[in-house]
Amino acid sequence: MALLTLGEVQSSEKHSGEMKKQNCGACFTRDIMPARYIMTFLIFSGMCLIFGHRVCLHVAMVAMVNSTAEMELPEPENVFQDNDNRCPAPESNLNVTLNYKQGTYPWTPYTQGVILASYFYGYVIAQIIGGRISDYVGAARLFGGATFLSSVLSCFTPLISTFTPTWMIVLRVILGFIHGMNYPSAYTLIARWAPLQERSTLLSVCVIGTHFGVVMSMPLTGYLCEHGFAGGWPSAFYLMGSAGFVWFALWILLVFESPSQHPRISTSELNYIRKNMPFISDEKRKASVPWLQVATSPPIWAATVAKFCGAWSFICFQSKLPAYLDEVLHLPIQKNGFVNALLFGALCISIIISGKFSDFIREKKYFTITTIRKSFETIALLCPAICMAAIPLVKCDANAVIILLTSAMALFGLCGGGDVSVIVDMAPDFAGKIFGVSNAVASIPGILSPVVAGYFLEGNKGDSEQWAYIFYISVGMYLFGAVVFLLFGSAEVQPWGLFSKDKSRTLSTKEANLIFTIPVIMNVECNDWKKNSTVVDITRL
Image: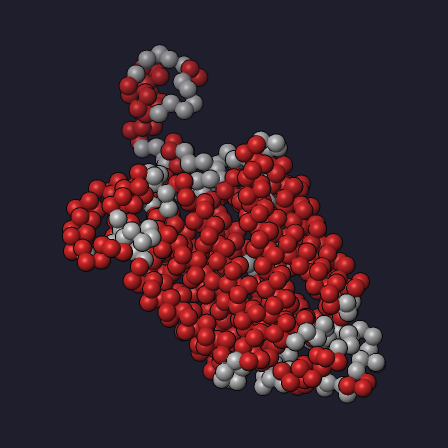
């Protein structure tokens, strides 16, 4: 993670003064809004856009696919009398359903699952290498460039979809890789710009942008599929892609790599950021992560397993829920989008509230931090499992299903006080790199769960019994993650979780000789030396 160093601070003084003199004509823009808040807002809106580009296809695919290519629709008067596993379509929805289901793509449920899952092939890889690329390219350039390329691919999606499904798979892999770059670059920018007192708040605003993008794009896509231009669903991709171009123009004008490079930042803001920016030595910044201890740490594995199991259901329903609402409950596509937005809006609010509430409990010291994390995570996994298990029991009651799904998502949001923060608790000085690997592992369900769902639904679209299997798999995942975290989870700082200068570097030959020969020369027993004695201590004596 790149932060302001002493060299950067000192070398920027003269440069900063010269830049201010050259930009006096733009001085009036300094006092309208602090530069760090403008950057935070643009990161927030950029996150909204890329997640809108990501989930737009989930809703649009309902209108894109020709359902009659796999299964002929029955006559209205005999609808679903021959199969008790299929829910009857309300008469008020039947005409609407028949109108929008006639897409042009004969993609089976399995093919749809593979297309949606392919996004995470690129996303998982980018999570691991994104931080390194950010260091070489520059965080501002990487975030802006990735969002711009995402907008370009979004505009080209309707054209690419006219080719074979392989082309769509390739496009989604590239899109996932591009989106995987945004998180590392956003974290780097916040680290450079956010004063210590504001860091958590500004970072939270950026992360909320991902959920806000889902909440806004799903109902918008549903509306455009029915009422949009260019044939309906393509307009959703064109509109979101065009919004990305406008955003990119603002980004290149208003965002810079660091405060010292910003030509219009006020002197008071620059001094405030410098004064409240923690100094990180080069040794600490370049310290290697003790990967062996990380790989053999039960609490780290417990947190990773909990993230994996929670992500399975979350990603599965983020990708397949529009199809369930369409094929099983027969919701019109516009209402389909609004129900999706309701679910993920409840998740967003719950994450914010649970994070604040867990911090409040921790500040009051009512319980240990491990007890707090385990309690929130257990509720976040067990309660959604109960809701998911109840959905097959209510079958075709659309209102009951929507209530259960919304409750499941809202309760899952309690992970904001559980696994979301636990890696920072355990390894404060290495949290970024460990979180990147853990998040990559937690993204693997994005590859597997849509394909598994497609396997069960192949040839059985609209069959509530096949969907029940998908719900029960999610229940099993939730239960397994809760048990593992409850047994092996911890939020205490691990012995290797803090940077230690003495432990992080190899002794030179001179240092080793000093440590072993001075006690002999001075006739002092080695046991009398403090364990943490440094070479400076020894040579001073």
